Image (cartoon, rainbow, N blue to C red; front, side, top):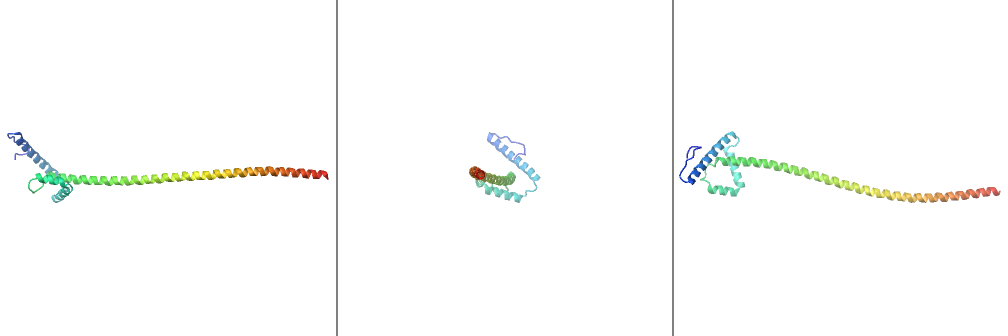
Length: 174
């Protein structure tokens, strides 16, 4: 294999592309090693666990990668970095899901409060309508009673006038 960055040109376009692919893989491996040096918290055993978890979650993907993989041995370095990124992504998605669940619960409770307030307003409106009808019935009853009292008063005034007239006639006759 040629040193990094150097490409060997062979006759035929296929041979040159294979060499370029190998050089690109070697560059990616070197970049991964540099990134791994910056990430001291990921130990190889932890990375292996992450790799197994990811393979368990994506079985179809694992079968395809095993079909074209080289003999068992040390996994490719970029796959560990990829799995670490997947775990970080899962943590972010998990926290996002928790946040969305909390917001959904808050929205649901506010919705229930709004429904309760609306029902309370409807019941208050019905109570006011019932009270208004009762008061209107009471007003009608009092008007009837007032008419009866006015008629009774007029009748009593006539009786008083008749009695006063009778008393006056009786006094003058004597």
